[in-house]
Length: 187
Length: 187
DNA sequence: CAAGCCGGAGAACGGCCGTTCTCCGTTGCC
DNA sequence: GGCAACGGAGAACGGCCGTTCTCCGGCTTG
Image 1 (tube, each protein chain N blue to C red):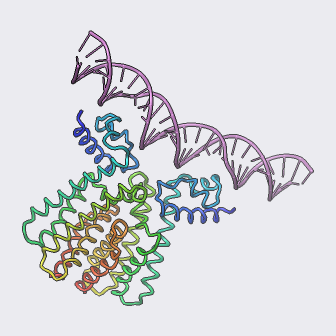
Image 2: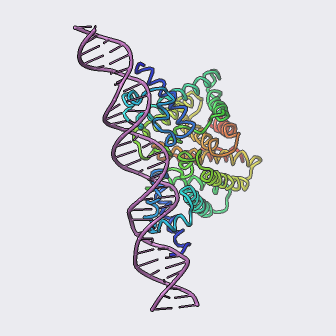
Image 3: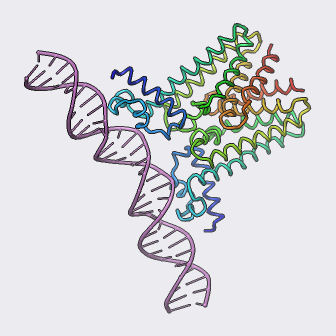
């Protein structure tokens, strides 16, 4: 098996297992077995579990932000509609069967303090998401795009937490309604 | 040593260690040693680590909500000022040296899926916090206190996440500004 | 005083898991 | 055809940790 294929299979298996069961609860050997890759290969590609977890988070970051952006792009050109589309996508995500909260918030709670690599991957993701929302806010006609972006970001992050922990199935809708108020006030 | 004193000392030690280092990273023996309690007593009071963790979370819930309520009460009678005081308190909390994010969000990420007791304690806390904000919102002169409460809750939860993971030292101030917009629009 | 229960200290046990090592079959090369 | 490098499979190692057990000193009680 080639390195590239082994790496792909490991990351696919890692994402499925780590996201659904948690990082600490999944052993290296579980990922290895699910991917059908030998120990030797695994340690050749990722010299420790920490590296594998960081790679899983980076891969998930790319996929996750890609899905958000695709949904936003499908909403058209209007800057307000594009900002609100983010919350529509969150609603779809929260309703998925295998939704278990934000993988990055979970990873932070699990090993954020103990692993510089994982912490950096989590912060990278959150920074990129915030930057994306900031770009969307800057396309909106307002005098204070930064304030708007900050409010939108907080609503989105709050919705992820509430949807993950609480039992409120409408977290995304509530966040969208509040975002609508912020947009109206900013215009 | 009496049972009540041993329990107190265990919970004090557990809160300090679990919150600062994470639950999985702290062994039963670490808590036991810090509390100066024998193994026998510990397992007599809490028959497993899961029980001890749930008790730690319950104790922290009471203290944490007490601190919030005290700060809100100090803000006076005006319903708007009381709602905004929540974010002032969050700002003070985020600035504390030992701030490491919301203990309940962290606990959820760490073992939320694996421990019914811990999951229940986390949900209990978030429900109670949400109910508290809902009460504050119902004292505010508006036609839609529920929407207001939902928005405030999301901003507060989002601020905790951003303050914990990100490097933005002004998360609470941004959340307060957005909350102000929601209040103005609701009035 | 004697005897028995209580509880403290800490060793022991069992299991899990990240990491490394060993064995062996295969493959490519001269 | 022989030989060496590679890599797959999985056992072995080391350490950690939750939980239980053993030993023993001291306090209580009749």
